[in-house]
Amino acid sequence: QVQLVESGGGLVQAGGSLRLSCAASGSILSMDYMGWYRQAPGKQRELVALITSDGSTRYGSSVMGRFTISRDNAKNTVYLQMNSLKLEDTGVYYCNLYSYDTTRTGYDSWGRGTPVTVSS
Image (tube, rainbow, N blue to C red; front, side, top):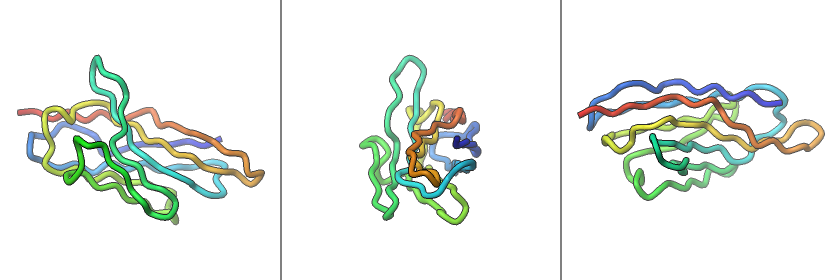
């Protein structure tokens, strides 16, 4: 099994910045893609950013140019740098990881989420 622990969420004023972290632990031989999703109240969960094992990235259209995803494979950690935050960035941010254990079994794991609130 794999455990994901997010941190870094909180309250920030519009225009400010936050950096989210997600640390993975457990039965991990290798990590494939890692990503961040968010869910605003009353809305569906949406992709924020994704990074593959070779470092390729993909962003949701609403965050492109403002957010940056990165990963540190040595620390089994993915980061999300969020700049120029807007009110509409408010939501619970979830970390997602697809990884393999020593038996080559794949796991699609989710964190419990960290709340981000952007105020005016």
